[in-house]
Length: 67
Image (cartoon, rainbow, N blue to C red; front, top):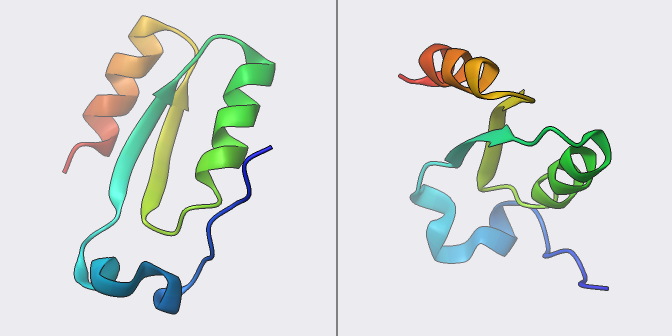
């Protein structure tokens, strides 16, 4: 088991001024997708902006999430 990294501005240190990494997660397996989401939630500098279960869904979400 890998421990979660500390969260908050103090934990980010030098990266506090950097913007968060925006992720669109694509996985058709419900259990695996939930597990990856839970892992990514432990990081303050990673922002999951959307999830998808198929290629058409992924492409649509990328279009909506792209800024």
